[in-house]
Length: 516
Image (cartoon, rainbow, N blue to C red; front, side, top):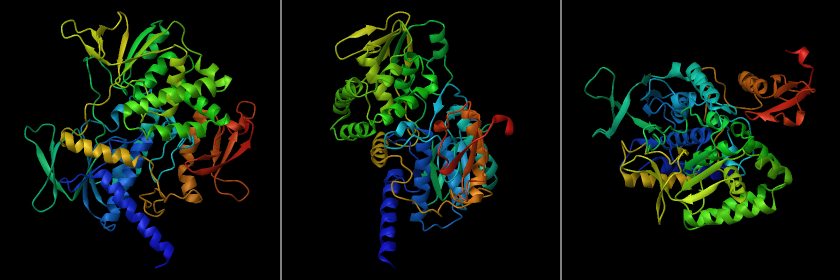
């Protein structure tokens, strides 16, 4: 064996250990946990964790096929996990408690999802994923989720053993023989049923959001915030300083929020101003702090200074374009509204809003009066009612998606390991040939004509939706890729992507009449 081959083997082994440690727990042999914890929360990060875990598990068992595997959860992570397992020729059954797959995300037309915006500046803004399977492009949540499900149903479901919808898994037990007993409820049966598997992948996500009032809506549920703002409502209290709370605060405040597109505009301006290294340095330094409270205090100083001293005039003008007459109170448990795991771009925008007096922050919790049921803000020193007429939005996080299976200490251990690992699919390069072609899905290779043609329809969907442009798979000047056609009188060519799904794009101006 060559020295280089030895290095690759050692590198793979280190990553196998790392990924398996982040997906397993002592005393829970036979179960791999796909998340739910990570340094950022996004569709792409869920998929990254799924690919990482399946690869590491396969490496540990020397890539033996034909394991009988259960996947618990039919969301983004569950579909990705089952697709990767099917491609590796395992016998896979997927359990989902709802009557349909990716139900919450398919109903969330009011949420915009993007592959990399939450990871900037660590990752460059890219409008599409570049994954082995189930790629998607920036869009409203319903569009992205339906695209993922459509590809999964077409290419991977036919190779599945079973899809079990409307089945709630209530327990997973290891038998004396070493197999895994999955216990679940089934419609029409009063007693639980069970089946045996060689291994179980749990991809149930964070769980339902904590509700203080029965009328509280989850982040993914359609809401009336946009309608309230448009109709003139001007008083809001937002509870929670994770990305959900910050996004809804900005959604209410910013005149040009545009489903989150303001984030892309701000990032592009900051990159043009050379601020990416400064934001990177702030994020790195914050993670060195000894506690989340100390990190929040550091963020407050660093991002306030960046907003005041470094943002361009154009960026400041963009952020100052806010809805007039708005009174917004943001409430959270940290001394300042900056969580380590929140997207940097959201923290920067909140820092600008605080600097301009557009939002007020209170350290505390939103709770309910036990007698009147009215909302109250509880701080270390007081308990005061929320001003009458305020619309209260609760974004205080999930209640625990693993409580049905794990003890509190186990959940804490899993969280620590997964937050340490992070979300990037390739912290070091995974083997290109691991994720094999499957049932018409070609091996991922951006220079393969077969793969380029396979992804052409999805690329064309994105180009048409975003730019009213189109493409073919012909490349240019003997170079492989998409040839992108656009109308020069309606699109600035600098806005067009240089690659989609990792495949090069060659931009060709052409009048609309010639190809519409």
